[in-house]
Length: 272
Image (cartoon, rainbow, N blue to C red):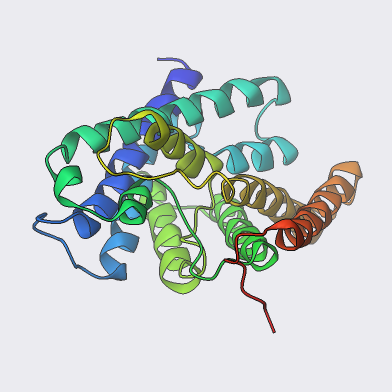
């Protein structure tokens, strides 16, 4: 298995287990229907850990375009491999979401609410304000990338790294996840959102493409910013990539302000 296939497989495992826990908790007549947030957070944490166990020795188990870009910034991955990694991660996200759809095939019909079905596949904000939503995704993904780089600085017993990464995901989920559903991974949101758009799900409603840029651009900006902070504080490096990461964060926040201003749906809530 090469690195690209590994990223496809690992991301598919991540989405099968992570999207699976969302389906288990939210779809009607599932045995876990009505369980609480901690169940979802644990499911996603274990999904990341299992995906990492599956392919960590082959590709490094990025399973996340934001992580791939951050590791390329830090010199852990050749820039020439970045496009292939990202494409395979998104394709893995689509495939994993299709598996979730198949796993819960009878439950889509009996779940009437369209947004609930969409929530199995993709994230949505608790309060829709694009500027604030971008901030949440930037901070959450920066914590993720910083955590991954910190973990790499420590000597850890063989085989424990994926569990520690899973614990990091759990910490982000229970502490920072309530605002936007902590996508912190463009492939985790975009791949399944694409699957939701084409799968024949009765009464599914729209795929909320107006929000889709937030869980893509936000994590990319946050991941690059997290890598920049790590390089400044722990390696003493301040270079053009550092400047670029800061510029991308600023542009992302400006995009959020513009989107708030242009949105005429009436769903935008003010911060103050």
